Image (cartoon, rainbow, N blue to C red):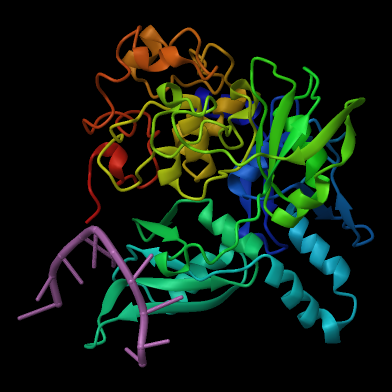
Length: 443
DNA sequence: GTTGAGCGTT
């Protein structure tokens, strides 16, 4: 036992990362075996992050880290050291650079935010003991919270839902891109019905033509991140010479349309992505493959899915429902036939790092043969015999239609919602799991 | 006091 623990420590170096320079907010995240840190690993914990920096103790200057091929490199050959690393977010940086004088900074911020309309968000299913202070405190991890209203009835008793508002659109998007567990309850955060349609939907997605075969989703992400926060990348596999990149800011997307860019020595063309009609007549809508629960078949999974499924992205669709995952339901929904890599990646994005097996060594490390047999963290995958003996389908991780064909048995036939699947062994379920996965409804 | 889908002025 002790051996295993030290073995793990040897394999994965953890570095301390915070969204700001406040060390109390720091999260330890694992590097790869070669000493680099995957941007996707960073993004899994800090949605929207596009880089890392740290304060050089010698001259107090902030130093940025080198990013190449989706990998962040340690500041020196000696490695990561004991620095507290801080996330870099594209939007915040842009704003900082524009806010040169204090007297017009507010106006500029306002003008900027006007383009990226912030909406109130409804929070459903809040714990009864929530207070406006506690909710504000929770959501501040995604950015400045400017309003919290918990709804009460005439007697003054809390109705279990409320509204919040962030100062920036980027913060709002970060909050919408995640599941939220507050005091042990899964809380739904959405755009309120009353606001639906109010937010003008300029396309955030662009079409990237003339891609070469060596361009991975991570390549596109890395390249286009310099124009703004990238929330989704899709590169079809097998190779089809195009891709899609989705930006947080629709204006960034629009500004790039019509331009040619050079990536990996090749010229690609950026143009507007034709809005896709989500119906069965559209050939890009592959219901057989992805199910019919709003997954549009044209997106990669979130970061962590890495390149095996053609993508490297945050959750582009805002809520888990859009991935065909019902966070509050009992077990998988009826159309649960997403490739597991996508699900795992989505859950990883949502902070369920435990889903990916020990040490968060999930899809990033998985090859085409699925999770490691005796995983490189020294533990079996969930100790679940059904999994390890029969393994995943042969064409694992390739977005393949065989997945639900269940040719190797065991996948859809048990262990999903019988209460002893994921959380049963090895502690690999979601932390404090009382969610639908174990078929235990919230109370 | 109890509760758990929903959609905000009081």
